Length: 109
Image (cartoon, rainbow, N blue to C red):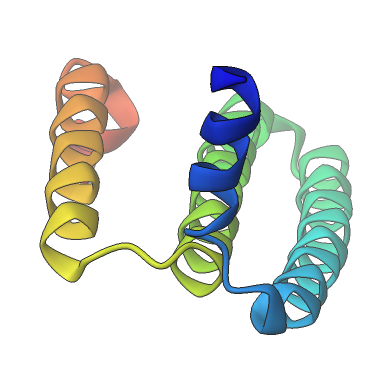
């Protein structure tokens, strides 16, 4: 009985009228990611001396696109208060900052 109640509580936080928008965002994000990764791969084949740098850029770009899609879809579909969303995004930003603090690519920027 509690499992059914828990599912009902979770379903209450979903804005079902925004699900098609979320699916459209996921589809456009996936297409953007595929095209940009293919472009970066072609650049790395063309400029072999910068291949390792372009591979790092590609990894960072993929992470950024996945994160952006998750944030857009999460904020569109889930009815969450803005304060909670900003707190989660701040925590994620802090974690990413600590993860990349020793990365040579980020130090050059």
